Length: 315
Image (cartoon, rainbow, N blue to C red; front, side, top):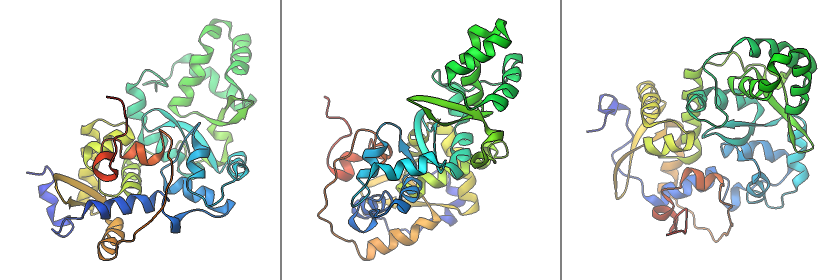
């Protein structure tokens, strides 16, 4: 029995969706069909939003695959104007997301950050952190090395801990990345970054609900395990958030043909799913995706069932 049987009244109709319908849903949402491709520079921020962010390092390839004729300077324009920002969100990967959504991605994944060793979020701040906050606010943006020299000169006892103190503040949310100097990331106080003005106001519970709905808006019907993998949550965290959203009707349970597991989708996604069931388009369209493309990250265990090949070709 489904653990959400008490809210089965919120479920979608009993007819199962075919995998072809679900496949078309995710391709359209991820802007990988001819009619959904971007065409101008103005389309870039909305494509980043629609795909749940880009993987830093492969972001230009992801955008190239989602435009008719992409130009790298289009990304540069939005990045340098702070409409797109980077940060360690989701599973701890360095992602590029829309500035007005960064606070939600960030707060929703603090439980993930508190568990990981790389880019770990401290449970609390100590004296060194508290001394560093006003210094970053006054002198930022700073590279890690610039902060180390400045902080170490004023507080010699913390010189050896300076880099860790700054990354702690970044992972705790007092500072954020704000572009680069050469290839080195710059950090500044969120109080000095108008595009992140809500950073300290967004709560973790609110952000987790937002992020789960964003996940389902991008990928359509997913299992709790699929959701947990994409975000980096454990299965208990994913099911707890699902339960709350099921109770409000923001998420509904659906069935997929030839799959006994319960799947969940945002209620706003039902209209597209139903329209595709009634009129499923056909495409002759090829895109070669890089290893961390948004489609592969969300479908890493489902690629064989839906697209005919595994995520990894290694035996």
